[in-house]
Length: 219
Image 1 (cartoon, rainbow, N blue to C red):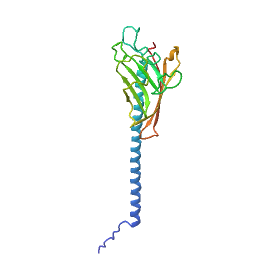
Image 2 (image 1 turned 60 degrees about the vertical axis):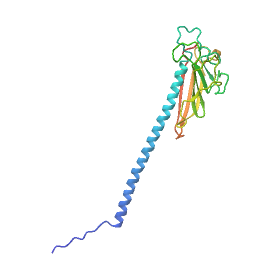
Image 3 (image 1 turned 90 degrees about the vertical axis):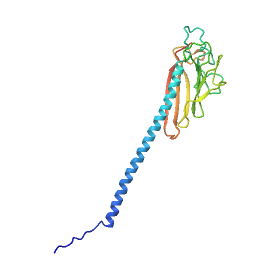
Image 4 (image 1 turned 90 degrees about the horizontal axis):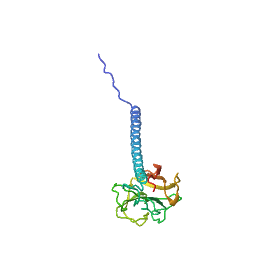
């Protein structure tokens, strides 16, 4: 006579151990997923911060380097020679309300002019400026005719260059540097730019860029 073999299932202890192991594996998987998301978000935020600061710095360096350029056949009588206060094509100022150029210390605003469309016009109508205001770098585009002696005050058309919703600019410093040429008449022959910013969503992410730019069109 055949006997039926008695079948038995898992015991309660075995089920509890299996559930515990499953929870541990699931927890590890979720933790790795959350960690990966955090790293990805931080990477994207860091890239955005770096790109914002680098783009801003490149624009300032490019414009300062071209200060005083005039497309006319002769440099004699260039309207950009004394476009900025101090009789210069580029000069630094203590802040965006300053009326006198900074000659020996760090500044927070720069104003310059050059013939950026290459038309060689005799009227000064191409004024550019950069300054720090309200956690953002502002840029000045002045297209109306200017006589001379421009500075960081008395002109309009300042617009945000950086987005304070993604990047908080905590520092913008322009420092005149000595060069082979005489530093007479407060001429900013070489300028050191220090730009500092942090992520608006993660204050731990901080970046600082430093560049030295030579004013090539010394007049």
